[in-house]
Image (cartoon, rainbow, N blue to C red):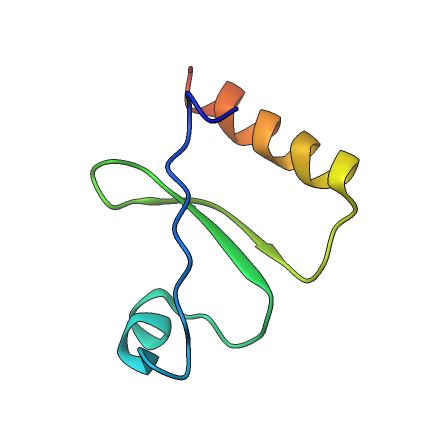
Length: 65
């Protein structure tokens, strides 16, 4: 999956403006954002690995990657 995604972690305590800009209100939140800054998908809350990989695959397929 790493060839399709760039992973980035934002510390919400240090950068609350980033959270506000993307509408993040809870943790953990994972945003899938296109290279032209469009929110493609959002996962709020913990997911087991298999469920999270399925979410990633759904985004990848929807984006045509």
